[in-house]
Structure formats: C-alpha cells, structure tokens
Amino acid sequence: MRTIRLIGLLITLFPLVSAAQDTVATAIPAGGWTLEACLEYAKAHNITLNTLRLAKATAGQDVIQAKAAVLPDLAASLSAGVNHIQGVTHPLVGASGSGSVGSSMTLYSGGALRARMAESQLAETSSELDILEAENDLYLQVIQAYNAILLDKETIKYAEDLVATTTQQKTQMEAMYRVGTAARKELVQIEAVLANDQYTLTAARNAERLDKINLKQLLQLPVESDFDIVEPDTSLQPGAIASLESTLETALANRPEVENGKTAVEFAKTGLRIAKAGYLPTVGLNGDIGTGFSNGNGSSLGTQLDRSFYQQVGVSVSIPIFTRQVNKTNTAKADIAVKQAELNLANTELVLSQEVEQAYIAALNAFQQFEAAKGQLAYAEEAYRIAQEELRVETYNSVEFVQQRNTYVQALQAYTQAKYNALLAVDTYEFYRQQRNEYP
Image: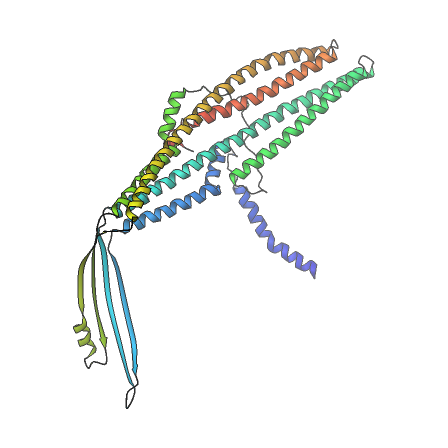
C-alpha cells in the first residue's frame, strides 16, 4: 500500500518538477550568458531593484493624490431612524430621516497645495534616480563577477596546457631515467612540478565555481540552474583611456547620484515654501444641500421633503495669529534641511570626483602593468621554449630548466591577471563617461 501511495505521489509531482525544470531552462538566454544578457537579467530580477520600483510606484500614487488635493470633494450622507414613545394610552411609534450632499474646496492656502504637488513630483523623480543608482551599483558588481569568471577560465586553460606539457616532460624523463641518462632526483623534480601544476588547475576550477555562484546570486538565479558564461575572447585587449577632465565633466553632468542630490535640494526648498505658507491665511469654499422628514408632524412625506429642502454656500477663512512657535520652528527646520541638502550635494560631487580620479589612476596603472607583463611574458616564454628544446635533445640542466619554467609560469600568471585587471579597470573608468541615456 505504501509503495502504491509513493508511486502516486511521484506521478503527481512529476509535472511540477518538469515545469520547474522548464522554467530554469527558459531562463537561459538564446545566445548564452553574455555580459549583456547577465545585466539585463539582473536588472529584471534583482530584489533590491524591484523593491525600489515598487517605491517609485508608491511615489507615483502620492503624485496623483497631491494633484487631486486642489479639486473639490463631494460627500453624501443619509440617516433614518425609528422613534418610540411610551404614551399615556398607547405607545407612539414614528420614523424620521434626513439626507444631504456637501462639497468643499480650498481656494487659497498660501501656495501649500501647489508646493506639496511639486514635492510629490520631486519625490517620484528621486525614486527613479534611486533605481538608476542601484542599477549602476549592480552593473559594477556584475562586470566584476563576470570578469572574475573570465580570468578563471583563462587560468584554467593555461593550467591545462601546463599539465599537458609537464605530463609529456615527465614521460620523457621517465624514459631517460630507465635508460640511465637521467638521475632519480631529476625525475622527482619533474613529478613535483606536475603535482604543482595539477594543484593550480584544481584551484582555478574551484575559483571558477565560487565566482559563478557569486554571479548567480547577483542575477537571482535558482541554485539548481545550469549556469555558465559565454566562452571569453582571449584576444581581448584593454582600449585607450580617455582624459580625466572630460570624464569628470561627463560624470558630474549625468550621474544619477548628482541628479538625486540636486533633486533633494529642490525637495528641501519646496518644504521651506510649505513651511512659510503656514503664516498665510487659508481660504475655503463649502456648500451643502439637504432635506429631512418625520411622520409625527402631521404633514405628508413629499411636503416635508419640499419644506425641509435647504441649500447653503459659504466661504471660510482661517488666519493664523498665534501658533505657539509652530510655524517659526517649521520654517527654521526647513531652512536647515535646505542647507543640509546643499552640503550633501557638495559632498556627493566631491566623492564622485574622487571616485573618477581613482578610477582614472587605477586604469592607467593597470594598463601600464599589463604592457609590462606582456613584455615580461614574451621574454619568459622564449627562455622557456629554449629550455624545453634543450630538454628534448637532452642537453639540459634540470635546475635551470625548472627555474626557467617557474619564471614562465609566474610571468604567464602575472600577464593573465594584469590583462583582466586592465580590462576591468578600463571598463569601470569608461562607465563614468556614459551619458544619461546610456546607463545599463
């Protein structure tokens, strides 16, 4: 019986499992996980971004409400009741009711309603800029994680090549040892080199797995999803570096954190206008129409409704005279908020300028290190080629061969690291040069 139930449960769950697998499969872009595909997927699924989008939607509703505040309202009320009086001869039972429709509208509020409308619109703009800031942060995180995987993949490639080459050298050394032309010590040295190469390959593969997990987390991909980025172009080279002055000018003019700072200043100034409006009178218009009836006054229902029908229109004026320092305190606080927003904007521009300059210096240094590592690798590669040839014709020195090989491996590692450091540094610096409509 338990077996039958288990089979039935598996049959029930199989479509759900298949659907989940299909969902994961459809998440893989047709062209593979390129950098562009990763960025698009991250923007669509990142929880932080989606939370900010909901905040923007809420701000949009606040704008609608603020715009509607200048319109008149309209409300209706109806009431009905039954009256019971314990009379002398018999109880008296009667009914009564009334109905009315009223409306009110603010004619003048010292500009507070218009200021609140502008304030809500600024808040919506700030919400949109918050999304752009988060997208920029996510962009940098994604390209860093993507670049790390590219570095891992190239490291794996050269580690596999080293293992293959060292395996051949070990085979050759074993043959030489068997015929007595090589000492046991020399064979052990090659075996140690091979073990070190295998360790390097294993470490590179583990690093790739960890970096893939990091990128999957940024993309909000399920743990069980099959994930791998598009095979990198190993001939990729870092491009030219633009001037610091032009990049800084573009960044200060287009970066969302600067625009958000300017929006915050305008928001604070709007708050100051609202606070100052508290000193001014408020003028309102109101009107009501209504009627009522009671079956105990001897008149018919129609007559009562007609005779009780009333209309009322009025104007109300509220003039603040003494507010126990409320208006004065609100105005002072709002003025402080304006000054604080201006300081925050100045600090944002300063921090951004420092970030751009640091990115510029990092790009220059990384590019120079890449050029130096490229030249170093060329010399080390040629020396290692000669040492390999000497080993092949058995005119080698085992100590010198291992030294040349270690020098080549170190130069290759330095070159690979320098290349991807330069690619990341240049891309990061170029990111500050993007125009407002070019943001990811």
